Image 1: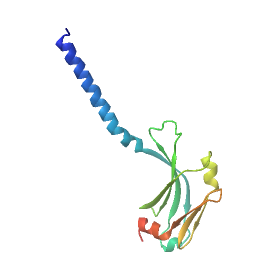
Image 2: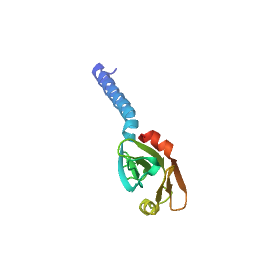
Image 3: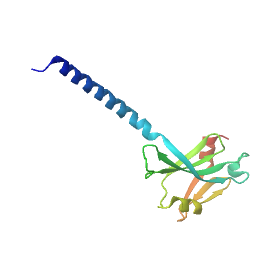
Length: 137
């Protein structure tokens, strides 16, 4: 027959482990979304771009989750902003060398859209209406 104090200490340890595992499971999704952001390049708008009086910038950022200790799985995003609100577009860089890729990218501003052209010729176009809706008139 087991001694009652041994059995109760075992239950306390088991309960403590279950509480700790539950807290870790609840915190994991929150912690995995925290990122370290690095701006790789910024392009400034031409005067009157998108029909706006204020200057805009398009920046390319590299985001690495804090749980990705080696930085092996970064994500990338384009931000079009006036310094306040921003239009954000997430995408993957189709290159093993992001620094070289970013240096070869080009941005064109006009009244109706912003075009982001990648080195391979693929172009992402962002209509003025979508950007203005996000950043404000």
